[in-house]
Length: 306
Image 1 (cartoon, helix red, strand yellow):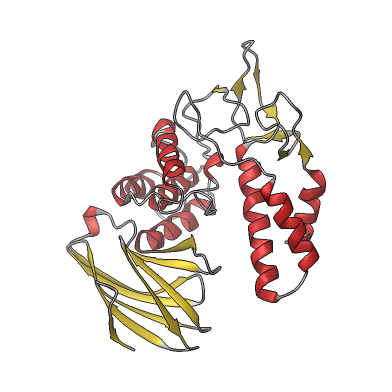
Image 2 (tube, one colour):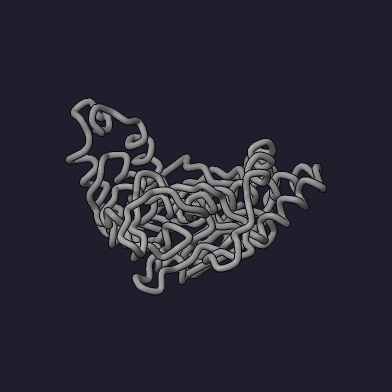
């Protein structure tokens, strides 16, 4: 991580005056995977500067380096450099014309409006720069982006979209695409059909099923993460159910059950000890757990046993 951060901080350049990101640090040249855009003169091209995906990945990397330095209590000078660079990155921006997340630094028209890649939503998934709780305006723009791209795609492309709909807490849309993935993009031996085969669709689908039930990417003020219970439960699965052994960031194992779409109980074990931030809908709670300690809460996140 440190080596990657060193490389990209050397690669970044300051955008000149008159550009959309003037004074900010950007990548140049830059590219949004496999999609092209139309210049004001009508020319079609792919290369630009400061594509959104680049900046989201860099934001994710620098943020993780800063957190690692704090946890390990090391590399203070390097951490300061990462923090300084992070402040100079352009923010994720919303198009004034479409209301969607901008894919490039400039508000260009897309050559393929329904392109299968959703690379500029890296900050939504697998990153955490765009969240329903933390950045609702960006989350709404991400929703508009996914709707504009449509529900078609390869098996692996659908797996990405399912995970992104989960991050937007839209379990029904996620379930719809999961059904398409399993019925139309999966071979009889359960291999993901690209064609011929890409494991991305398989791993992405299982990750998506897990994130319908538990998510733990939302950062908290103390440097840990919210463990969100049933954030994207589809209506088709809401009558009743349970799951055991899901893992959450922070070193937690989660078992939970639900009835009529509502959490009934959750049993969480801390493998390392520390704070447990729980979230279920609008309800939140924080608990301090010792290493190996288990806590059971009810649907209101109140302690039933520990």
